[in-house]
Length: 325
Image 1 (cartoon, rainbow, N blue to C red):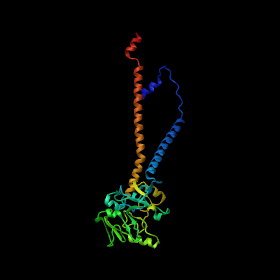
Image 2: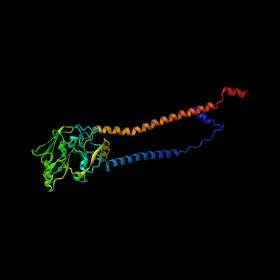
Image 3: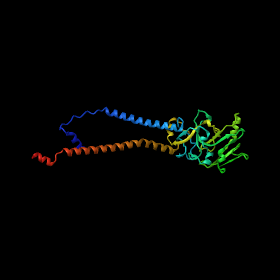
Image 4: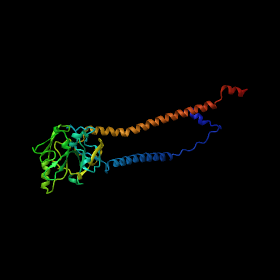
């Protein structure tokens, strides 16, 4: 620093120049400009991300927040990356026809898995109504109503291994089902589940309508299908199928709106705060490291320049002797 001051104190013409008054107003304006620039870049990034998600899903909003534990794997309220847990944000893709959805029964033959089990997870409106929170559960089977109005068929059972399913009515076959379907070794519990096709037929008869094609859905954490709670799901009720997730961050919305339907998994809460701290601290740490590096580089550059100028301008011993001579 001393060399740098010496360099400034002795200009080329031997006269110390008048120092310009620094404009204090320039710094705040510059800081405001930089803040607005960074905020604009961040906002643009968020907008582009949302546009990309909308372009992929075909739905707005493209994300849903999971309020309950009905899709969790395990009984200890521990979340797992790759499963749908309380507080997760899930990306939902639009579907245009029933065949866009692969069910659990389809997965038995083609191996299609999502979120830790066979088949797609779908989001649907209860009874097709916009009132109330939609349900996010796994599509277990798709049933097509036969022309006789008294039975269903399921082509996915035709292709599934016989050891993975059975029918409770003796004369029932995959293309003529009137009783219960038993799917064996289901989910993380590896327990059988029953699908009461007879109750669907009775429901239609009681409502005075002919049976229609329906999905039967189930929460991975639940012991029974949604037939017990909401009944069968018509395709027109389906919002879309789940594709991808952002774990933990939906808890922020659930806390702020007091809409948490089940206790938040403790490890999700822990991982959420760790993620937030990293998101906040990492840019600050990187910016600080870059600032320190730049200041050191600038200090070395100025010191080197000052030394060069000093060595160039200071007279040598031989020069002094020649002047005296």
